[in-house]
Image (cartoon, rainbow, N blue to C red; front, side):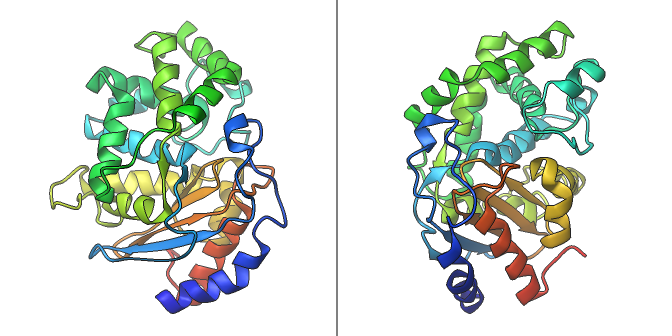
Length: 301
């Protein structure tokens, strides 16, 4: 497997940053090197291999939504009365669909849907951001993982669109907690910094059909399957169809440049390269995952 990663790094790595741009609408992310590239693979046995900048922490942003969704669903499936499971076809921060669909977000991975998930997790735990951080530390085996306060403050300062989404849903009764609290936990959750190594390891419960690293069960097999299916159909914003076509794996991207992907029963993958396409997905990251599934034949199809 390491030879495959090295081949991909030799092919894709030198092109990283040549196309796309970093998420400079979040000021704290504007200074990230667009040419950075890291790739890690974590097997269900716990072994993690990587190449390039695979041990450099980066802002995981929307990749955190996978973990907040898992924790919310661990508390029951009542969440599905408040958020849908369909691809959006619109940008991840669009207000348009909310108005047409009476304040019910299309899926849990667009920003509106993720705010509902954070709200549900806040009701269940009293500390949504802390619950996500605790899960990531435990599953990665790295207790040093933490929030990036500068990124969190930067997102809050530019968070008017997310605030509008939250207030709009609150007007339909689709938030249980005060808007300000939900937004605060959401921004801090997205600010968590992790490496490809840690994020690949943290996501292994999805490859293990819901089992955590210590052998306990976070999700039943059905819930793990459903998260993977939503990652496949909705995880790459409004380019999810193209991602499924090229990569053929459940995946979740973030505007920090990271992508987490799952090969059920085998392994999890994390690739990071900060230069994004117009949909908010890492250009080199998608290329690398495309090459991985082509070279290995590992795909859900």
